[in-house]
Image 1 (tube, rainbow, N blue to C red):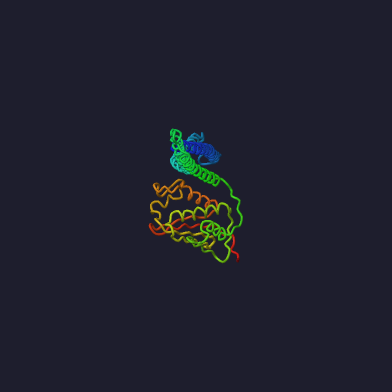
Image 2 (image 1 turned 90 degrees about the vertical axis):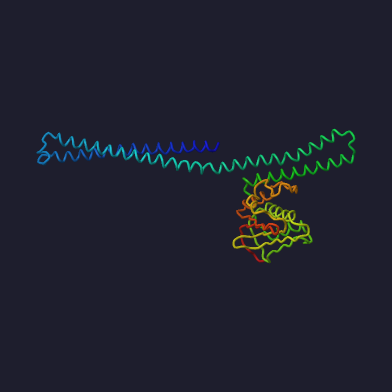
Length: 336
């Protein structure tokens, strides 16, 4: 589809270019031949004046008129041939340039279209899986005439878990959709205070997470709700993918013009060949792990950071340590 669109757009670019080139060529040919004709006529008038050597040698002016016509025709042919060569060069060069411009114009649309198609397909799959599980359980229950109250209770709990998954997935998809096109309301926030709130929610006694914050407040202009969601995703991931009882280290600091949030955890890590894809929607490093994740958390984190003109990066030493780093532009650094 996009290949044919590129060819059509190239054709339109080239048509506009050649029409413009031909129009200018006609104008140049008309003006130039008129100028040549006028100059030759002026030259003829001068040499035909009485007393001129040419006048005396050619009193009937036939030779001069013939020479003038020959020079005019030769100049016209030369100009026409030059314009033809120029237009052929424009046609070839313009064709290549038009194709490159068409590809450039459509490449971003093509990428967005492919991403949307993949996103729709993945979202349909993710929504279909819990619905299929719920349908199967309900059908089995309806066919069982001896279904006990305990079995019914277990069935309802299982279905409630699937509903919770669907609710969480729908909420994340809606958030991603809004981030794709929304202008977030941003206010000055202290990244250290916000990080402390998120960590306290997960680990009140600091039994697993060690958070280091600076003595001075690091203020960044951001949407507090979105940044809280970002930190929540990273802290939750660190806890989920690290061995029980292992220590997680989080740090808030200033790096040049940026406020930095760094979080590191031990565990299996992420293979180097999979690192470039972990921020893609619905991507999972280990599909068979069955941790209940939708593969949207890190994609949402990336979108949030991008909406704040920041940076999100990851490094991983397989089997040892995985580190996520968030950089957000700083407004100012005040004393506490």
